[in-house]
Image 1 (tube, rainbow, N blue to C red):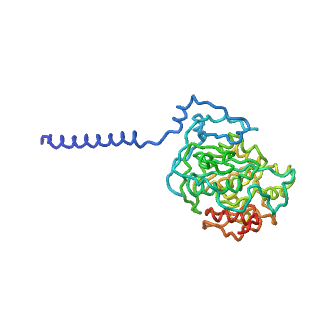
Image 2: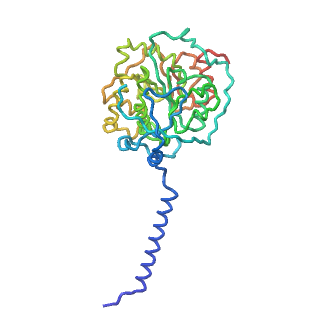
Image 3: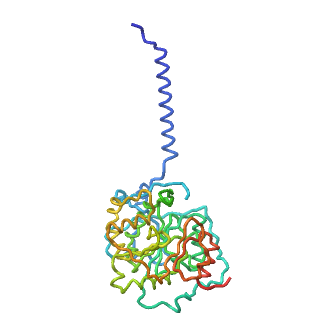
Length: 378
């Protein structure tokens, strides 16, 4: 029998120990210098900062900062993992409050653009004033803290347009956009919720759109916990690059029928002639429909396939599962004029009385569209 070669065995053992040591060192470095921030741990550390959420929302100008999830509800409310590619019947307990300092590298121009559009204007398409008994709307918008969306929000604020003309509004972001708007007119009255999570999503699916359903499910859960969906007859979700004139929406909602019919579980098709009829630029839901969505979100998450679609497709499929019917605007009503695969719509359509036109990603063209909508000359 040949004796074992001790020298070769020793060399192999040394190399093995060296590789194990390097691997362990790499793991330690990754742990101490590369691990992500644990939002739930931050919440636990801030447990002594207790606050009580007001039953009916929050007063004008109050900044509410909180995490989308509480530690107790983490198992029920999935938060999308951070991604860095471009691109009053509720019984739920209030979320814990947090105090944070918001910092951002994005600076917002603190001056408003020159325009003849009066902030206190009326809508020439509707005559003077608002009729009594009209449907009321609460509008909300998600703002990513990048140059493009903040520039569009600045313009809406300066012009007193879009969600700022709704009966009530709320802005959602993961920074204090109200702080970024600074001294711009109306900034102190902005209602906002600051989310403690990434807003980044990947793009994909059959339409190469933002796969943002998990993010919006988390925001809808936040809305339900705050009971914001109960404050007005209708809830309207908007995109920042949508030209939206709320005073033109309320007559369209009135055409659905008397309050008894409008108060049923239903939502409006944003675009009745589109393949997907509920689309993100403007989404309109009755209070009763959102009550049912609040109760059934878990079911929709389990039974609706949304792995390759955006939040609007998920909602359309969810409402179909829940047997909540859509309604179309009357033929004479001009709800939404959308277009696709372009950054900006044609401004020539802006003087034709539409309640919403999408998209306008260029702030100058967005401004011009609003001017044409209200008959302001060049």
